Image 1 (cartoon, rainbow, N blue to C red):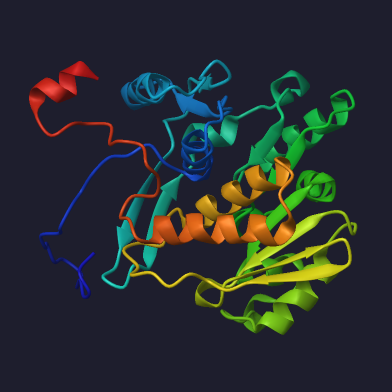
Image 2 (tube, rainbow, N blue to C red; image 1 turned 90 degrees about the vertical axis):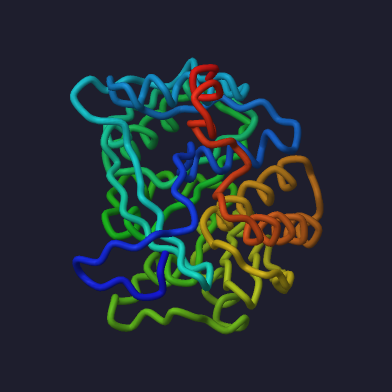
Length: 295
């Protein structure tokens, strides 16, 4: 994105591409890179983009059998504007994503990764979790500022059941009930450690707070763990949080020690910060007509 863009301006930019993305797909890419099979639970519109996206991600090896179709809403989409510094702004429309309905049978998995959800899908997820049989699944929850701002009873129920909860500094303060005017963009390591313990629903819940260039902290079982950030030339911050939490969650589920899981997660985030795209999936359209038609 140009450093300065005045109202009414039209400027050339380095690249405009259409990628499959969003928190769930970013995490999916991370899991698949590490050898895991993934079933995606989401919703697409009954439109050309939805058909194209379903076919595209299916060809990438993702199980799309649980992807729903919402006939009266368009496929969700987002415009991501990346500044020269790597910071990003996002314009998003959830569309069909807000129609997602989760049922207990959808939750048969070793690891359940919950990307930011709208209010209605979060309520249905809470009910599905309550309805399912006893399970050893690892439940990982990755909310967002928008999710926390409109949280209902369903989110509180899901949060209470999470085995792993991942937040950034702003999200952590919002969850703690800090008023918008008092929220700090940055927290010290000590502040983050204290806040992580305060937010844990129970001591066995792994609660992570990412702190940008300072790294990340983890509260678990009465202990604090601190992982400094790896130094990297930042291309884009988009997808780094998803790479961090999904990598941590998988390492956690595989039984790695907390400090080792934190280190692997930080390495994954650093690798993503050094790339433009939010994940490793190829764009939905190729560079020439033959490639486009072959998809």
